[in-house]
Length: 212
Image 1: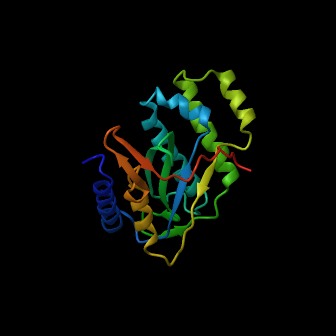
Image 2: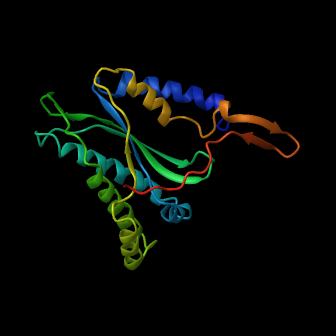
């Protein structure tokens, strides 16, 4: 069932296995997370159709960012993007998880390792992608977008996870994490059938921290 944590966990394991055996290159990968501040998240709640554009725009941005650091202009990076709309407390929190290659593949099959990413450039570029998308959709005025640029001068928070050139199991574990259910069995502390309410362990509310 769609709402069953154990069933969703099984699907995540199968998806992760399929990705690593049928889709992903046997090359180093890295897990990225692109987030947005609370006032931006709220705008997408009533404009769900924009989430698809947000997903494709985030994947395009990260791919371009990686490719710019590769010496061969024809080489391309690989990116798998997943949109998640929930936070640790099952609150509305749309954000992107991306599994990206740590380099680029040229048409002749040659592999080019990517340079070290600039978080400052990527954070500002991600902010512009999100704000421009909302302005074009008339969800924000240009003045409101400018106010948010001033508030978040260093951009929207971007996280690049660990990577290892020798850890061949990292892409599989990350793929399983990307496909994980919103609620795992381990977080369910109890269930009250009379009120149809589940008691859930959570890490507590964490305020949004813009890039330092």
